[in-house]
Structure formats: C-alpha cells, structure tokens
Amino acid sequence: MVKQICQGRLVSFAIIVVAMVLLPSVISFAALYDPMRPQVATSVAAVQKVAADEFHLEAIVVSDQRRVAVIDGKNLNVGDSYKGFRVKSIVQTGVTLTGSGEQRCLTLQPTIVTIR
Image (tube, rainbow, N blue to C red; front, side, top):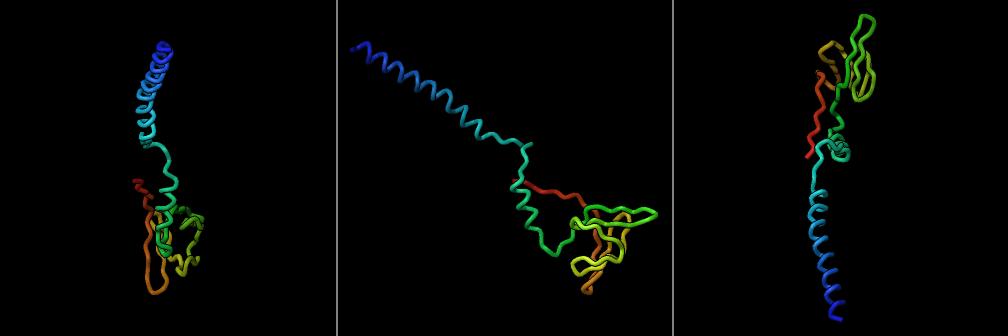
C-alpha cells in the first residue's frame, strides 16, 4: 500500500515537472511576434479609413501614342471625368484634375501602411 502511494506521488510529481517544463515554452511560442507575417486585417482597416473624396494615383503611362493615368484602379485619359473632376493633363511626374472650382495635382507616392 505504501509502495502504491509513493508510486502515485512519483507519477503526480513527474506530471507536474513535465508541465512546468513545457508550459513556459508553449506560452513563449504564443507570445512570439513574426514581423514577416502579413497583417491583412489591419492593412484593410487602414485602407478603408481613407476619405472617399481622396484620389490615389497608382500609375502613369506616357508615350507618343497615349497618356493614361490609373486613379483608384480606373484607367483615365486626358478629358475623362472621375468623381466630378476632369483629367486636365497627364505628364510623367503627375496628373492634374479640375472640377468643383478647384484644381488637384496628383503625384505618384508610395503607399505606406503602418501596422501596430
């Protein structure tokens, strides 16, 4: 009987020791931050906060035959209308929009999303 009690305590002690050894490693793996992991949810939320009246110039194509600007995913030529503005000019360095009594000059800027 005493032998069974000692074996039971030994097994219990072994389980506790194994748990104490493994538990911190499991917790530390959960707390690791992977900087290379995509933060899709945060990025999408940050992009959706952009005001609806802002224009985002994504690309410019200037050649002898044509001039095209990609604004908010739309291909626009000189003279096209978009969100109440007319494309006045497309040059290699930017795009000029006119409308509603104002003029906006768009330039290519990298989109930087800060993830916290």
